[in-house]
Image (cartoon, rainbow, N blue to C red; front, side, top):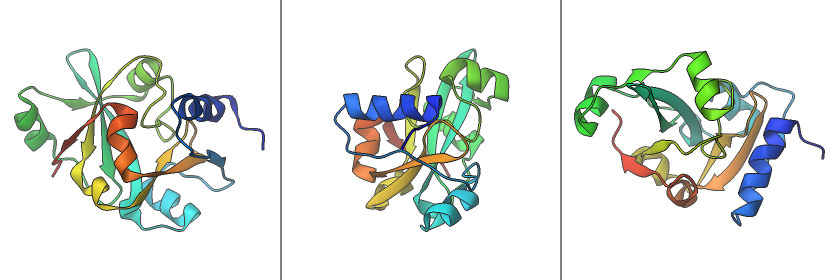
Length: 155
Protein backbone atom coordinates (compact mmCIF):
# COMPACT_ATOMS: atom_id res chain seq x y z
CA UNK A 1 0.00 0.00 0.00
CA UNK A 2 1.27 3.47 -0.84
CA UNK A 3 1.12 5.82 2.14
CA UNK A 4 0.83 9.60 2.17
CA UNK A 5 4.08 11.48 2.84
CA UNK A 6 3.42 12.10 6.55
CA UNK A 7 2.30 8.52 7.18
CA UNK A 8 5.34 7.20 5.30
CA UNK A 9 7.60 9.32 7.52
CA UNK A 10 6.13 7.61 10.57
CA UNK A 11 6.43 4.15 8.95
CA UNK A 12 10.08 4.83 8.05
CA UNK A 13 10.80 5.99 11.61
CA UNK A 14 9.28 2.81 13.06
CA UNK A 15 11.13 0.60 10.56
CA UNK A 16 14.52 2.23 11.25
CA UNK A 17 14.09 1.57 14.96
CA UNK A 18 13.09 -2.06 14.53
CA UNK A 19 9.39 -1.78 15.42
CA UNK A 20 7.23 -4.23 13.49
CA UNK A 21 4.28 -1.85 13.32
CA UNK A 22 2.26 -1.19 10.19
CA UNK A 23 0.87 2.25 9.51
CA UNK A 24 -2.57 2.05 7.97
CA UNK A 25 -4.57 4.80 6.32
CA UNK A 26 -8.33 4.70 6.66
CA UNK A 27 -11.20 6.37 4.88
CA UNK A 28 -12.78 7.15 8.23
CA UNK A 29 -11.36 9.96 10.35
CA UNK A 30 -9.19 9.05 13.33
CA UNK A 31 -8.87 12.68 14.47
CA UNK A 32 -10.66 12.11 17.79
CA UNK A 33 -10.25 9.22 20.21
CA UNK A 34 -13.86 8.11 19.62
CA UNK A 35 -13.44 8.21 15.83
CA UNK A 36 -10.18 6.27 16.03
CA UNK A 37 -11.61 3.61 18.36
CA UNK A 38 -14.63 3.15 16.08
CA UNK A 39 -12.43 2.98 12.97
CA UNK A 40 -10.09 0.27 14.30
CA UNK A 41 -12.54 -1.59 16.54
CA UNK A 42 -10.90 -1.15 19.94
CA UNK A 43 -11.89 0.46 23.23
CA UNK A 44 -11.50 4.21 23.56
CA UNK A 45 -8.97 3.64 26.36
CA UNK A 46 -6.63 1.95 23.87
CA UNK A 47 -6.34 5.10 21.77
CA UNK A 48 -3.20 7.17 22.32
CA UNK A 49 -4.13 10.86 22.25
CA UNK A 50 -1.06 12.95 21.37
CA UNK A 51 -1.50 16.27 23.15
CA UNK A 52 1.09 18.97 22.59
CA UNK A 53 1.55 21.49 25.37
CA UNK A 54 4.05 24.25 25.84
CA UNK A 55 6.14 25.30 28.81
CA UNK A 56 7.52 28.74 28.03
CA UNK A 57 8.41 28.18 24.37
CA UNK A 58 9.29 24.49 24.65
CA UNK A 59 6.97 21.75 23.38
CA UNK A 60 5.95 18.92 25.67
CA UNK A 61 4.07 15.88 24.40
CA UNK A 62 1.60 13.98 26.54
CA UNK A 63 0.40 10.60 25.32
CA UNK A 64 -2.96 10.16 27.01
CA UNK A 65 -5.43 7.30 27.03
CA UNK A 66 -8.50 8.16 24.95
CA UNK A 67 -10.69 7.68 28.02
CA UNK A 68 -8.81 10.25 30.11
CA UNK A 69 -8.52 14.02 30.40
CA UNK A 70 -5.23 15.59 31.34
CA UNK A 71 -5.51 17.65 34.54
CA UNK A 72 -3.33 20.65 33.63
CA UNK A 73 -3.11 21.93 37.20
CA UNK A 74 -2.11 18.54 38.64
CA UNK A 75 0.43 17.83 35.89
CA UNK A 76 1.95 21.32 36.20
CA UNK A 77 2.30 20.73 39.93
CA UNK A 78 3.85 17.28 39.38
CA UNK A 79 6.35 18.60 36.84
CA UNK A 80 7.15 21.76 38.81
CA UNK A 81 6.39 24.19 35.97
CA UNK A 82 3.36 25.62 34.23
CA UNK A 83 2.08 24.06 31.02
CA UNK A 84 -0.56 25.25 28.58
CA UNK A 85 -2.17 23.56 25.61
CA UNK A 86 -0.38 24.46 22.38
CA UNK A 87 -2.25 25.95 19.47
CA UNK A 88 -2.34 24.42 15.99
CA UNK A 89 0.50 26.55 14.59
CA UNK A 90 2.88 25.80 17.47
CA UNK A 91 1.99 22.09 17.29
CA UNK A 92 2.77 21.88 13.58
CA UNK A 93 5.92 23.98 13.91
CA UNK A 94 7.32 21.82 16.72
CA UNK A 95 6.22 18.35 15.58
CA UNK A 96 5.84 18.63 11.81
CA UNK A 97 2.26 17.33 12.05
CA UNK A 98 -1.20 18.83 12.34
CA UNK A 99 -3.45 18.29 15.36
CA UNK A 100 -5.36 15.04 14.94
CA UNK A 101 -2.42 13.31 13.27
CA UNK A 102 0.48 13.87 15.69
CA UNK A 103 2.26 10.55 16.21
CA UNK A 104 3.97 9.61 19.48
CA UNK A 105 7.40 9.85 17.78
CA UNK A 106 8.98 10.81 14.42
CA UNK A 107 8.80 14.53 15.12
CA UNK A 108 11.03 17.10 13.44
CA UNK A 109 12.96 17.52 16.69
CA UNK A 110 13.18 15.76 20.05
CA UNK A 111 10.28 16.53 22.39
CA UNK A 112 10.04 15.72 26.09
CA UNK A 113 7.31 13.11 26.27
CA UNK A 114 5.15 11.89 29.14
CA UNK A 115 3.00 8.76 28.88
CA UNK A 116 -0.29 8.34 30.76
CA UNK A 117 0.18 5.40 33.14
CA UNK A 118 -3.26 4.11 32.14
CA UNK A 119 -2.04 3.41 28.58
CA UNK A 120 0.52 0.98 29.97
CA UNK A 121 -2.29 -1.22 31.38
CA UNK A 122 -3.34 -2.33 27.87
CA UNK A 123 -1.51 -4.99 25.88
CA UNK A 124 -1.94 -3.07 22.64
CA UNK A 125 -2.74 0.55 21.85
CA UNK A 126 -3.38 2.55 18.69
CA UNK A 127 -1.63 5.83 17.89
CA UNK A 128 -1.86 8.50 15.20
CA UNK A 129 0.52 8.07 12.30
CA UNK A 130 0.96 11.49 10.76
CA UNK A 131 -2.52 12.36 9.46
CA UNK A 132 -6.08 12.44 10.82
CA UNK A 133 -6.73 9.25 8.80
CA UNK A 134 -3.71 7.12 9.71
CA UNK A 135 -2.89 4.98 12.74
CA UNK A 136 -0.66 2.16 13.87
CA UNK A 137 -0.99 -0.49 16.54
CA UNK A 138 1.80 -1.18 19.00
CA UNK A 139 2.46 -2.90 22.29
CA UNK A 140 1.92 -0.46 25.12
CA UNK A 141 5.23 -1.63 26.56
CA UNK A 142 6.89 -0.09 23.47
CA UNK A 143 5.56 3.42 24.18
CA UNK A 144 8.27 4.42 26.66
CA UNK A 145 11.28 3.18 24.63
CA UNK A 146 9.83 4.45 21.32
CA UNK A 147 9.35 7.96 22.69
CA UNK A 148 12.08 8.04 25.34
CA UNK A 149 9.13 9.02 27.52
CA UNK A 150 8.38 8.93 31.19
CA UNK A 151 5.23 7.43 32.73
CA UNK A 152 3.06 9.92 34.61
CA UNK A 153 -0.34 10.13 36.30
CA UNK A 154 -2.28 12.71 34.31
CA UNK A 155 -5.58 12.94 36.18
